[in-house]
Image (cartoon, rainbow, N blue to C red; front, side, top):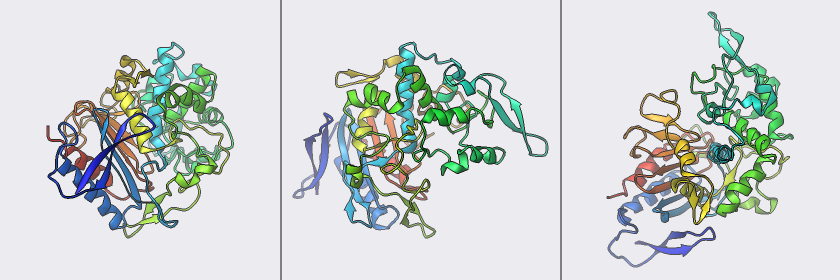
Length: 422
């Protein structure tokens, strides 16, 4: 039988660590959570490892700010026989967007950025942008944008900016070192230039939809990272450390992993033809240059590495209306804009919205068992998270699978929600 022992972590929370104990009757580990039902998560995660679908994973669930479940299963590097640990580092890719969006909102609160302000006020090449429309024969036709791209449109991915892999623009993007030339499009860790140089070049390329007229997932938050640098006068990594990760004690959330800690970084795997996890190759579409590389490009859209504990603490601050443990990062009104639908039905017409940094749940059933008002997102390497204010819960799952052909993410979320009995 598994029992949970409360341990104090460096970041100021207790953690329930599974230990073996004599058989005893299951008891709740927190109000409204069934200890017996939590063990179903163990079986689910271990099953994916035993079947060879993933190498390993770390899962963490906070309820009322206290961890009620934490488990590391399998391997962080199967070939090296390194076991997955609670403090294993992961490439979190698009989960970086939430921190960059928080950085933007901090500068909005200071009056250094306006929510509806044109991005061209910060990046010269965005003063006049273009759009690659398709003519009646499907050929690209470059036309001027109807209106300036705004900060709000970047926050909600409604600026018309893709990752440059669309057929009508991919050749142009590749010629500029973006899109197909950047691995999966979003990858910049190997670039030997600051992110603002890359974004200045991006602004000279045509986008794929008119600003404000469609939800298009792409470089939007990377552009915002450059805006943070321009508005604050400091590199993005320094701003995030000074204003978010440092005050919150997130020592493991960084754009690049120190060489001395390389063995803490989980290896990347991919789903093979037989559905089994196989080790990904080196390079942009695999392991990436997160330890050995130029260490110059601080990509606000997909560049950070982190741990489950660090990321959950950041999310707990958001759930708390912008403050945690006496540290205030944002005001409640700014957090409200981030965590409520600001894009109408452009993102989805099925009950999901998009706020200033997070996907939102506007209808029960639109995203599994998540409550109305829940918000979250995921990363290209298979990481995912959900914050559910109504359930007073933060949920984080870390894996390193790209591409990820498994269904572990939705099944994991369901297994967490089924443990709630209130």
